[in-house]
Length: 286
Image (cartoon, rainbow, N blue to C red; front, top):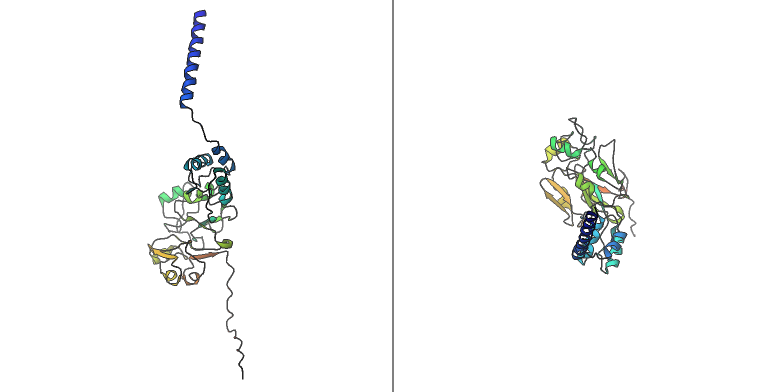
């Protein structure tokens, strides 16, 4: 009995010594700045920065030695300035962004032709059919994007059947963009005073077919491209696209669109001329 106890104690001591030297050999000394950077991050772990959580983002910024290509969409420029101060680096400010829904295929604009009876997820429905309106590119209205949003920045409008972005809550994390199987949600610059202009359609079918399924579909007529003085609009695969980096918000393209597929957000209403109104005669010197 005594020999057994002594043997077990000896084995335990030898194992402990071996484990100690192994731990010393392979121990990793972590840069204390990682904890400091992690502390100033919002802790949302949304993945919007492109990394697997805030901790991984902090580790990557410390190891990189510069902040090029690093940005926390939830914390924004304020958080990145704090990270830069901790690391003794310089952070480049980015224009604030917001998610936009590039589909206006509401129940009024794109009436239902079919009824989907299956699991209520956009991902599943996308694999099976084109959509209740018949548009193979439009919103399916089952709310995968809303379920993916961690910031209560989206909801499904029961009247239109489309998702609505709550701008003041949106952090531009991109979770809704990834969740949408139709790729109708895009991150765009918020713009000065929240003003934005974009084509609210992603349908690449020819005009007549697109219009058949949705009254406000882009028909690829190219009128918007011709009137844009800033070369901000391109036409590809029967679909117009406005580059927000080039767009100067002149609004010349908006009235040119015959289907009202171009949306202007947060602009004041244009004053309409009163029909039959007479202009005041100019004073003439005699």
